[in-house]
Image 1: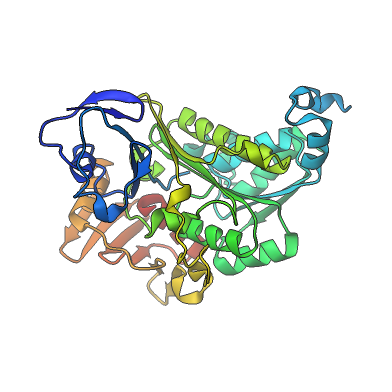
Image 2: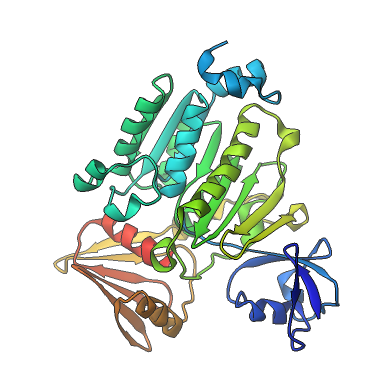
Length: 67
Length: 341
């Protein structure tokens, strides 16, 4: 499936079906992140139930502490 | 028109009126590391009326690659960062009043600073989430905007929090992360710092000239090595029951039991640090992270122990830590946040 992630078209493996899978794929599942799919922010409780479709526009911002 | 600021005043959204406003404002910069020095220099060059800069650390050689106000002499002499920053900033612009505070920013100290000095804006240039939660609570309690900025590796993130308008840091985070990646464990390149500084200072100038409608209003992040950029409008994340910005705020991080606790352990040349709130570390992951930095690590199911030259850091699963080889709480806190964020 092809997703537009942070403005870039990216091919993700077939196993990636939900937001939760996507975060795991990018090894962001243990980090605190804000995820937007087609301009709607997905609440954390819905990561596992929110399925992604070909062409979805996803923005992912994760928090870091350094400075 | 003062020639010094002529190019900034020619920029129409600032103009002469904006410059007058900037010259009357007081900015509190919390932290004088990479982000703190970058923000402070830009604001001082821009002609802000007054800057107060706070930091508990001193200059080391490993800072010079990216902390733009410091020199080799500062590192050789281990000059406290706040002092070294003040000296350089006064050379850059003698019109600006610069106040340097060598010390830690706890809830109590931050509230005192805000009440006594009445800053117009807070710049986050800290290296840990505990202090950011305190800044967030204090900013919303006293209705002062604050600008979050953070970076690690080639990645950076920023957002301007405006009490009464935007959601707060607490709404966005819900809990304090325990990621473990910090500039001292994952490294940092200076362009990532400069990019965050640019985002922070741009929003700071808009706030100082009171051009509220031009604020970005988006949480931005970037990775300069992976060539990525993201921006999310986070207004919808604002929670009505948020303990910081909701209808009945309690400002939990300003209360005693949510603060990081430190204690010098008598006769053991050690300091204990208990972080605010509950942390939950994956000790195996933490041990691997330290090992990757080439540090000597010992671990058992209950704790991870890292040798750091003369000091040793021992971390328990709940985030409590012992720093052996020092009786200095500031030094112990520096080590704690350096390795655990």
